Length: 113
Image 1 (spheres, helix red, strand yellow):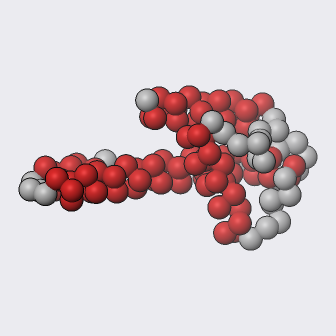
Image 2 (cartoon, rainbow, N blue to C red; image 1 turned 90 degrees about the vertical axis):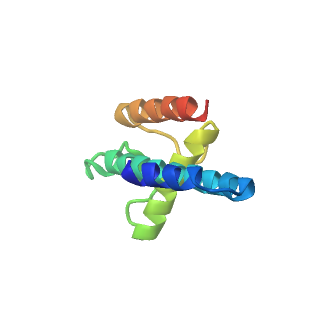
């Protein structure tokens, strides 16, 4: 990421340790949100891939007919929850969703370590 390199270069030029720590925390939060956004969009895409499939999380949890903001925030909530061990309210329903959930859980495990 070019933005990450610019932010790192800027951080290295700072004299203030407190400001440097704060900017590092902001970079981590922004990187986590960016990763979670992509993960959430793919998670929703897998669930909504075939609208006629009754066994998918989008249909199972009655998300399909909700507003765009609700669908996005639900997917983002699921994505962010992968960093803390997953969530019980929204779970994979079919094999494709379960494979993706396991992969994202492993990615979150590696990123957190």
